[in-house]
Length: 234
Image (cartoon, rainbow, N blue to C red; front, side, top):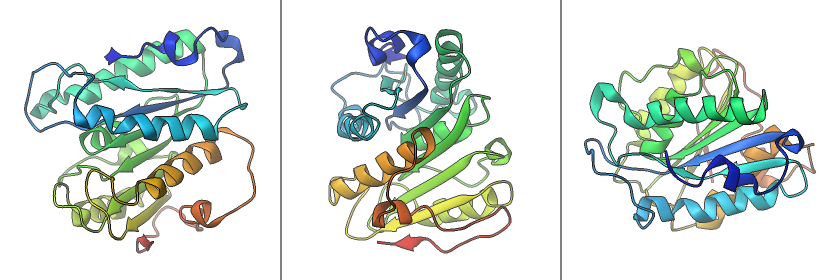
């Protein structure tokens, strides 16, 4: 992985003081071995997402890591970003021990975090406007809390494929689904809502519960494996 190192993610805080980790990943393209750049739009878009999560976790002992994938593409069977995440999670385990990890990913990054969710550190995973073509596996999600959020106006990745994936995933774990009206793939319209949903999801997993509010309620509806709920539309 490129970008931030795990050390820079938590600065000088001793590893023993870190109680949890959120890994925030960016989008990409289907095929490309071109190295990622810190100036890519898909990379920059995740900066405010990571900041919102970090603010929500202030004072909790949890930290946020926003790395870059090695290359820009998924690259078929190589599943390049998923392989990057597997290595990153092993690094986190070596550096921090058995802390809970929440994975958050946008677009191709959403596909990557869901694919990598079977790592033993992972307790929850959120896909934002994820790219989830037919045939994506779901067995690795067992025992993980899952949030899938998609914009109704997305013309890059498919809401129908996301909800179909949610239906398959619901057979092995609990899944919350949210459809946001008036927004698109880049999450620029209604950006604050995207950020609030993601930050509240991470905090609910890694920090003591706070007062329930409309954002938290969006993914806190009762659910159980085998039950497929219609996406909450907001």
